[in-house]
Image (tube, rainbow, N blue to C red; front, side, top):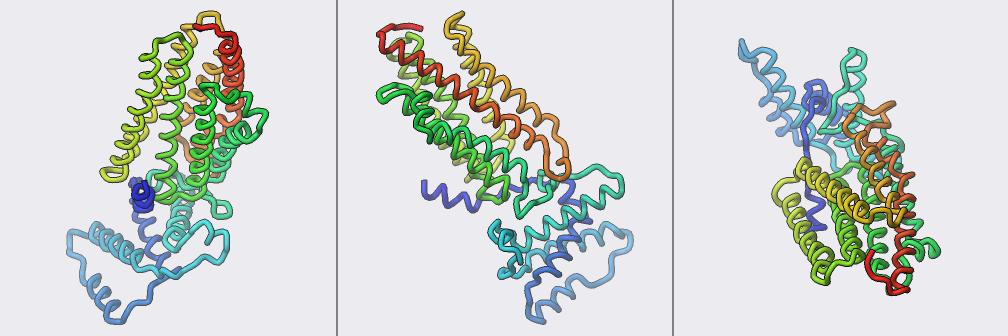
Length: 365
């Protein structure tokens, strides 16, 4: 586990896009680095670099050769940065804006403005839209909405009255699984908040990994709850709860190994999460239909999950950030935050029903 945490810092996920491939952006990046934080080199090294880039362009190659030279020069310049450069503002230093990231941000904004003046559509950079940062925060609305999504989990976990309502009394079979669910969710949304505030290799990896952990745990929680309450046999309960749990732990370890040591594949990550979301939703649908007219509160769970899926459809309409602040992802997170109390209300009513059933010694549904 310690090795996994250490390797987080070395995970680099680079997805090329039209914006970062543009010659305008690459030239800007090289020029910015030279102006903002050049690394003073020995004269012989500078002379060697000058001689390497000198010479005539072969006739017939024309603009292609010149563009290759400019791109190579820009790459070389961005590799010669002063490691001791620091931003003037303390909040920018706190958010770890170094010379290269500062130049990337300034050049993204510059190129985006250039395209806007030419009535050209906006471009993504490294697979993501360019946002206007606020006090060093890269995606203000996504980060803030992620924080708001974590607040309900913290409120229900840390408020004694609410905690006892949704997780039940000591000895209740769902008490510990539900408490762990809140902790897992808080951790997931915390890293989502951090990642959207400052996109770094470590924060990106942590956001992806803990989001998948939350989805896997939610799937296990559904199986554990359904298997324990529907009059299934002992072996069926063991398989639906602990058997599935062991399988998920094993797969999660495989997922981490693949993402860290093989390929940090965003597409594969999203496919896994999509399967987990679909399986989670279907599990609760089947459980609700199997109850017939019993337990009217069951529709709170279905309603919550349906609204979350509807909100997630915002991701389909991927659009450039409005005012440089709000994109489809931020909209999705803003919509899901107010829905979470409905999910906890379902668990409050289910816990009350189950504890009453257990206290009366009534078996079955």
